[in-house]
Length: 245
Image (cartoon, rainbow, N blue to C red; front, side):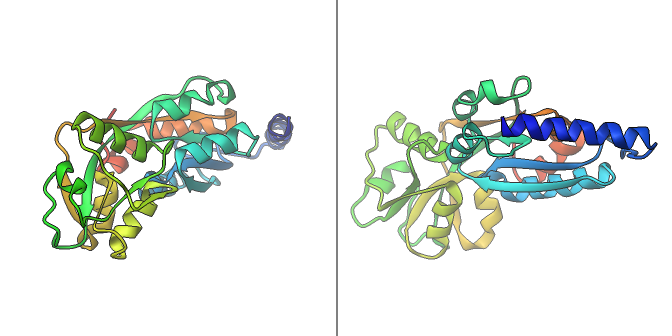
């Protein structure tokens, strides 16, 4: 109900601006504030996308909330004022299909990678090595896409790992490894790229590939979704290591 009221007020405001002859849009058309809820692995890429969107839409301002996809879905279900939702799995997005204005669309893919401390002192070369005694491993919690993808990778490889901790989101896993609080963790390729020399990445051949969908929660978010799906948006995502859907 709260979101419907906000939409109504937005519509009234837009009509008032139109009646006064104001409100010219940018190159992409339309302007205004947009609140985007996005998976934590999108933090750097979407921050860049948001800046480009604001440049293309005169007067627009994008506000982001980054967290685990599972947390964002719960917030949207509880009526949080999001205009756009972007998650790291179709499974999480499917949980809020009824909350969206239209259907969600896949906009990127991402691969899993093992990250270790710089130089890989425990000589980790595969998922099997993460099950060895003395190797401290951290993963994302159950329900968090990065954690679920990792557990699927372990199951497919018939490897059993006892993680030291389960983090609230994938950036939490990355941080634990960066700080030396864990020997290894499983994150996305894009997270490893952001970390740079602070971690050493090890590929995971045959691991599940994450699919990222994006959807507009209300009409205000449609223009941002269109920008993410555009060539301009896709080029930005590619710079941060994301694959096209």
